[in-house]
Length: 314
Image (cartoon, rainbow, N blue to C red; front, side, top):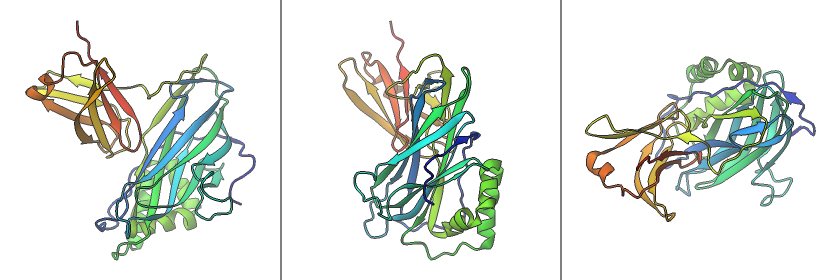
């Protein structure tokens, strides 16, 4: 069966799965599929409320001939204290119900506490979104954290084979990063391990981490509350940093904002392996930011996470 009508309560621990690497040498122009996730409300929700967890899959390849990705899947671990109520996707209005290319919930594994979403194929420069509707059953004061890992296979795969040693190494990486998803992978060799072996022409990546608090009120902001810190003591310039908040290695764009609502691009950097950023400007670059600027924003290109630094000027 594709998706279950009633999903039942899931007790799922927080997991961010590490990248599966070293199985192949990528061919130029082949797809790179980036995961991202967001939750609404994104700061605080109440026990009994329903929330929405959105999972993004974006193929940034521009190669129309070889840039397509197939068998795009996400494996999501949800926190204990939520119940999965429903599912919808960006394919709902554009594809027929019986279309094989639709995104759908492939499995809800209550034993291993993992939700698998099949996005189907994702073409060059294409983006799909899957949305899980969740009910919060956890009591006030409970921290809720969400983790997602995405994997894909190239439609035009590399010619370098991924042998059994490569597939075993990929499984070991999963176990080391997440016993929960490692147990799931062992229990589903036809679904997960076969996909790992196909990494001779594919890849995998962890999405940005998410955290939500159960409280007395529901709080939502236009962007997640992620702090961008500026350290001007490291000469000869200023270093901008964040905690692990972005999709690992994704491009992050930075700009400054003025009181009239306009913004000016500063530079691009890439998130680190853990999803944080460390970037900076020299003395001249920092001095060139107008004194009227109110803040600096760093935005992940595929996770849509934003980190903000507010100027504290007299």
